[in-house]
Length: 263
Image (cartoon, rainbow, N blue to C red; front, top):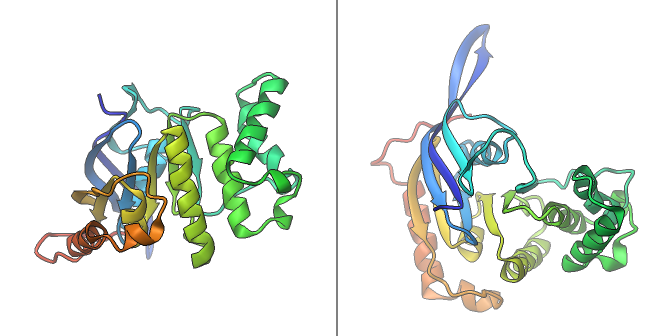
């Protein structure tokens, strides 16, 4: 049984254009499965529906039709079986780094001793033990994203969802956090679904890349690079890396197939 299953998921939004209400289609019969422990990338241009799909999996949006299941259970709203890392960390400014990590644990009503121990473990896991008492305004962009990752992992979700988590960072910090994510995945074995428009990032991190165009599934491309992928230079110069990046680019730019882009 697939760990995450999307079956014929569609999503339409009602919006007014010059006073006339129209329906905008964000997703159209999207179907794919994710196996336990896989890293799946949702790749495509802005407006292709990838973030909408992620938000539906999280339960932040509801599908207009179709179904989403995690571990065989139908999704009905948010739940602790899923954790989400947003493009911007969205930390609570009045809480320190470690107190932000504790937030989800407190929502689970866990004993304080367990909350403290788990928060310490995950703040250490992302390499921020030295800055755990800093407030968000005292942290760099990359450090804030690490706190966001620690917060999502601390609740022990079955699936980690990431919406372009490194998109707003400089290239050096982005590469550092990409490698940290690969290391965390290697140590935890979490199922990960992440959104990206960066083709290099998709190939570097994912086991399979779900290519989306205009709310549709265009193609699913397997990435047959061995794990762990700790040597970024070796991975990026591998023949498989270049081959799969080219395949994704060609799938995105194949004008022989229909693709109605949406806003």
